[in-house]
Image (cartoon, rainbow, N blue to C red):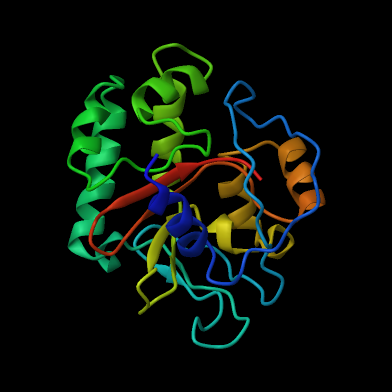
Length: 223
């Protein structure tokens, strides 16, 4: 793994400094065979999210310019910069094929391989084959699609670390979710998973980040 990626990921994922979170008990996710990595995350504490809108609309979850406010939850793909939109579409298209090797073409178009764990893996394809519940990696592909079809947030807007992150749960307190957002969350995890995440204080399942220039930076899971 390129050393700069690990440093940049910690900065890009979380606009604020990363706090040392207390050790959390291992949680069995909805896809309970999917491996996760441990990432210490400082949970968002302030603000409250609005109801999730239908596709093609956006729901304000606080003014990103206000100190401590939550980022806006977005569903309108046209708001994504063209390079980001193109990368999202390429990932989804490759994942829908059911052939993990199709994802290699997307990876090769990237400046550097996205971070998929903190274990030093250099080949995301080989890692994904062992991370899911099936040797073909189709569970991982399904998770990618589900995540990229959820709402997203724009973090660190206007800074060198600006990032578009799916799903938006990464940036919202779980106890602030509206009923419609709860439904969207349960497309990714189970109520039992959520209980463990609430005890920890943050969403811990897979999240994916793409920079404004279309660079796919990470696809990781864990606490």
